[in-house]
Image (tube, rainbow, N blue to C red):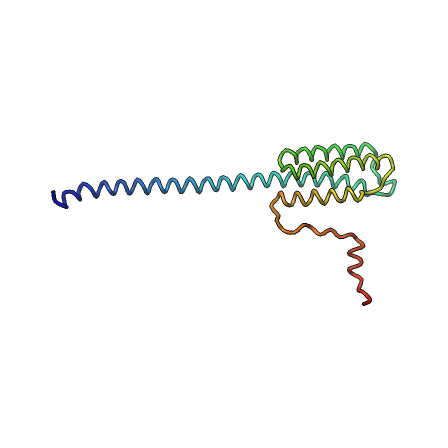
Length: 173
């Protein structure tokens, strides 16, 4: 047999094998790219769902804080309004538990429980505004929520009004 007769058989066969391998490799790469795209879309949708739940919780807690911050008796909400706001907050907390991590869910639970206890005292006229413990739990929730949404930097710096006021006053040194 001569090279020309063998090449007429071998070269088309090699072309078929090479073409098939190229097609399989192309399909594999396309599927892998599609899987990555799908995973990225799922992660983005999950982040959006978590963000929406966190915003809902913050909205509900802000409304409770706002009612608790009204110190003038004529501005104070009646017990029914505060109870309705707390009901909305408990519901928002349950949504957090459904879509967020255990750490964020626990922080939301702790803050909601403390707001609930403080609101009972507020309704009874025993307290005004938010307690330091409630404020601390709010900060813990916010930090957990920030991490949940992917922030990996330093925590928020919480300064009190007196800290800010003191920083604005030049020292006498």
